[in-house]
Length: 127
Image (cartoon, rainbow, N blue to C red; front, side, top):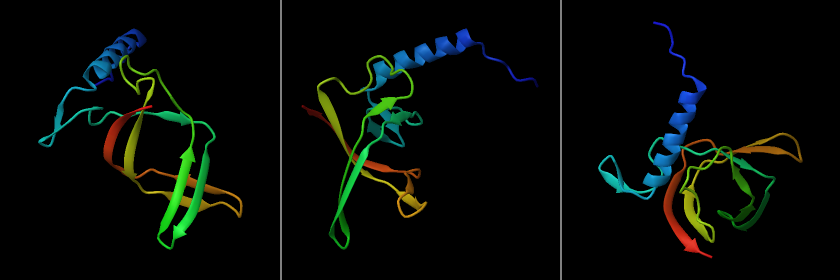
């Protein structure tokens, strides 16, 4: 059976409908495996571009590091209407993630976070 081609106008209309749906439904309750939640629908995602950031780390104890990473991030695409962080607020996450670092030479290393991460808390904070 031949593949069906989707034309650009059809893709654009579907994308606009999805953007409207995303902005309108973000704060509505959803259900996943019997649990209620708000926010992004399961299976959706974001793509961000990060400017050159600054990573500072300091060893506090044999098992504890103080880490600070500051960077500006930009959406790769257009944000759905009504989504995103409202101006004048910020959000705060507690995240446990895998970090893999590969040494390139004495001065350089490649770092990636590409395995499942677990976000435990999300809250809006007024600035």
